[in-house]
Image (cartoon, rainbow over all chains, first blue to last red):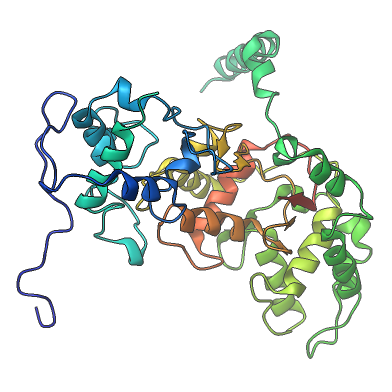
Amino acid sequence: MAGAPAFAQPSVVPVTVVGDAIPASLTGVPGDAARGRAIVTSRRSGLCLLCHAGPFPEERFQGTLGPDLRGVGARLSAAQLRLRVVDGRRLNPATTMPAYHRVDGLARVGNAWRGKPLLDAQAVEDVVALLATLTD
Amino acid sequence: MSRVAAGARVLALVAATVVLAASPACVQSDARRPGSATMSPQTRAMQRDDAQNPAMLWVADGEALWSRAAGPAGRACADCHGDARASMRGVAARHPAYDEASRRPVDLGQRIAACRQRHQQAGPLAPESHERLALEAYVALQSRGMAVAPPADPRLDAHRERGRALFHQRIGQLDLACAQCHDANAGKRLGGSTIPEAHPTGYPIYRLEWQSAGSLQRRLRGCMGGVRAEVPPYDAPDLVDLALHLASRAAGMIVDAPGVRP
């Protein structure tokens, strides 16, 4: 097709689910917890605090729809966290939590967002790295 | 069906209704709450007191427009409908309703806009225009205190059902259905806001965040944009069908228009 790049980068990295987890990193590049923190607390990219509360005392207006993120790094392994961020619907199809790294099976996605996951692969790794530090 | 069988069915229905009325399930359905129930005391006070409610400015403009001639026909709403306090009583409570001319359900704002074009031959009243909201607020006020009463018009059934399906369809990049927040998680906090139960008893509302009055359509479009879904244009069938479903969820609740929301 004219104008389309010859070798478009897939926007979503294929994953291998093992049990209730994705053991392998999506990128092979270790996540950066500081960047993850910025994503989690952002009301534009991560949107996490709209639904979850967590140990982010500087953030007002934290949500109560999802579980509190305090101690999530003690309750779940990095591999388990990765699946829950990538696509929690594989564990619970009725979950309210959006799949952060998935573009198929969605309906009526707005033009600006179509074909794009909520978070790219490295951002998922950054968020997982941050969540893994929330052990208290 | 024979008359005897029909009679037996009616009796069974009456019996079932009596049982239901006495059961806790019915008590629960009466526990439906309007959006104002989850607001701060300050915002609630603002809604309750007409002298503080900013939406009353739209009502005042609507009242003036009601008697002002418009269009080449040189006719005002009042020339046909008389005193709105009598003629418009209950009208907002039964909208959206079926519109013979367009053969579709229309909400109150659309009805007013259509009336203006068909009978006054005046220019279109654009969605969210001050004039449309003002007239809608004035007409809605005439139903204050009445029960939401969606028409039992079979021509609306398919639309209502479509609205119900839309309410439960997960949409957008965030993959959320209306029902996931407004049924399953109503009362919880989304960021700083308490999620209401989606009973539109107070539209048009004055929303502090908008610093303006706005319609239910505007509210619905805001939610759709929020979940990063396609946002239908104003007056699109999706929005009216959704409004029909919401009205049936709120049937019997008390109209408290014009509302104030944070």
